[in-house]
Image (cartoon, rainbow, N blue to C red; front, side, top):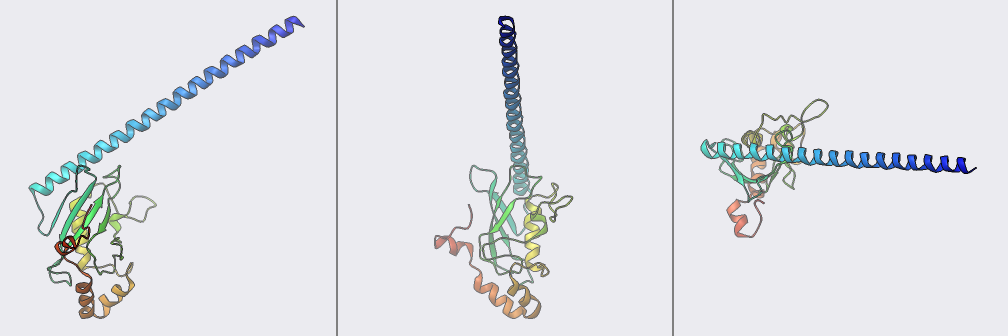
Length: 210
C-alpha cells in the first residue's frame, strides 16, 4: 500500500507540473497574441495618420476649387470640410459644412461623413447622413463601393456631384426625390428654406464641425 501511495503522489506531482506548464504556455501564448494585436493596431494607426497627412498636404498645395478640408484639432482623424453648391443646380451659390471621421483602418475603410449644414436632398436625411455608395465598405459580398484608392478629395467631389445628380432610386428623403422629378421650382424653394449659411449658424451658436 505504501508503494502504491508513493506512486500516486508522484503521479499527482507530475500531473500538477504538467498542468502548471500548460497554464504557463497558455498565459505566454495569450501575452503574445495581445502584443501582436497591440502592434497591429499601432501599425494601422500609423498608416492612417500617414495617409491623412499626405492627403492634407495635397489639399493644401493643390487645392480644388469649391472644396476644402482640414483636421479640426490635434486629432488628425477628425476633419471639418466645406463644399460649394455646384453651379446650374438648386444649390448654386450655397455653402455647406461637413465633418469627416476616419476609422483606424483608413484608407481600407471609408470615413463617416455628415452634413452639418442643413440640406434638403433626396440622398441626405435630416441628421445629415448621406446615402452614397463610396461611403459604404466595398469588396466581395458588400454593397458599398469604397476602395483604398479613394481619398478625402474624391469623397468631397462625389458629394458635391451628388448635390446636382441625386440617386432617386435610393432616397433617404422621399419627398425631395419626388419633387426633384416633378417640380424643380418647388424643390429649389425647399432647398433655400432649409439651408443656413455656416457663418449665420456659428453666430447663433450652432455647431458646423467638430
